[in-house]
Length: 248
Image (cartoon, rainbow, N blue to C red; front, side, top):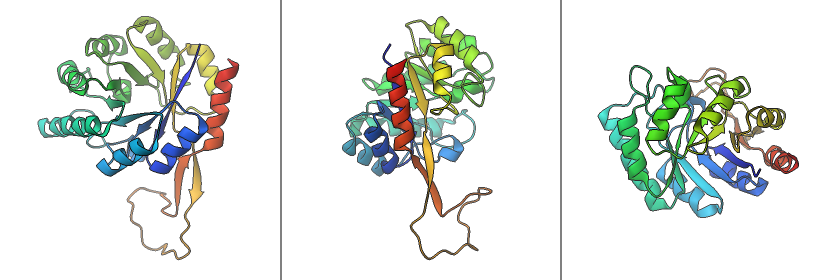
């Protein structure tokens, strides 16, 4: 089996690192500490123009839950327009209803609207009430794949549900595990689930090049956030995973 690797990135640097390392595509986001939101128009264009591999863009107007108002839904539609105009290969969406079900009607409309771009339903699925009903609902929307951690914080902990979802979906939907994966645990997940596509950030921390630092002023409201370091896709780690794929 040929395995595919998607790297979740939030910068042009990480996107280029993912390509250099041999990833098949990137999922482009902003605000990864919030689970990812739609990146800027400029970021989308820059990544698309500088990458030859696939580019999928998350369509998520804000952090928090996945219950969206009509104005927020309109934002999602307009962001899909931008993605189509920019030549990206796919979008990543997820909408729930207040009772924890998949919002089938609005999701299906976005899937249709996004054509011919590929559509991934993201980890909003991991917050739904009934995974087995929800996977059938996602299939009914026309989505191409599902990103899931098996309704756990880490995909390795949700491996049993992921395996069941793959069997249930069969060839109707690609099930792509993601969440807490790295070069140390991905082989175990491959063997336990049999999935063909995998999603991870594969990041490392690098220090800022700033020599002058004003540590008493904080821009971020996130506890423990270090504004003089940032995380970028780790070429070496991603290369190790790509090489592992070739041995299985």
